[in-house]
Length: 348
Image 1 (cartoon, helix red, strand yellow):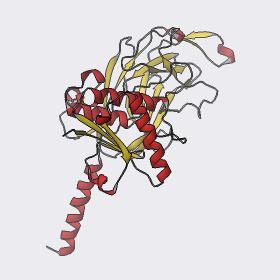
Image 2 (cartoon, one colour; image 1 turned 180 degrees about the vertical axis):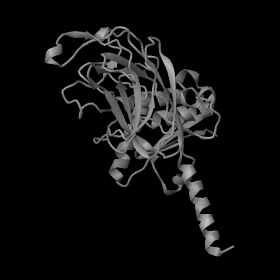
Image 3 (cartoon, helix red, strand yellow; image 1 turned 60 degrees about the vertical axis):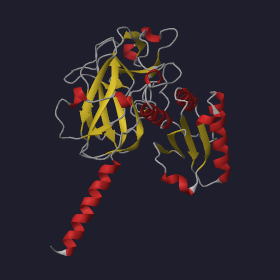
Image 4 (cartoon, helix red, strand yellow; image 1 turned 60 degrees about the horizontal axis):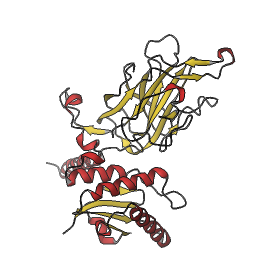
């Protein structure tokens, strides 16, 4: 065989293997829409995608509020809060989006799950001089999922839910295959397909899963049989060291240092959950190493992380926080990026 052809085949196989190795679970930032409950505020980690198209309208709302704002009474199904979005009869609607930790890959199959429900009572106002007064927002609407290149761009419609008219929280599972690579995801409330008018409707969202790649040639039953357990662990059901590693990775992914070197309130909650999880496994140790080029940032961030872990009363024997060393990069990190590396090891 021609040597150039052999080289080409070798390169192709290497490249295919490399690309496949890069296709990983895509964790969302704040997938449970946690934030202080209040109206007209997009949850931390998400962008208000209705702002550019409908600048006069308010963003989505964070529930449940103590006074059951708008008549919404549902409790969160995961953590403390959830998000509500609406469609309005004045032909406006709400949506949110975020930049993904890594792009969705073209022609790669993904499975995604989110808990959805509808509030049977939802009263609000419409900014329309001809339609003044309080309105009922109780018509069933749908969730649309988009992939895009930047910001809140809607490049490709990836999935549409059925009409959401269940008051109880239900899991909705979606399987989709993007035609192109997409850096962003958008979750959009919209009128049901075939509707002639825009209704006043609401949809509630909680506990979104990661985007999980899987073999496109799998049986159709993959949506029913897919094992979600590694991706939806909570503090109350961590049973093995592997469970702990998954949980720490999912919480650590949402951490980032602000411009002033401080953690956000959401970031502090993530540290709190990591510490609580580690305390359940006294024979496991958290390694949290800071990566960066400037020495003063190393020292500042190391101090911030240590202080936060101390506040959570995690035993000093169960964590090590310091700057990265050259030999550290060879470790089996479960999470890297955002200026730090994280893993969990068994204490000898």
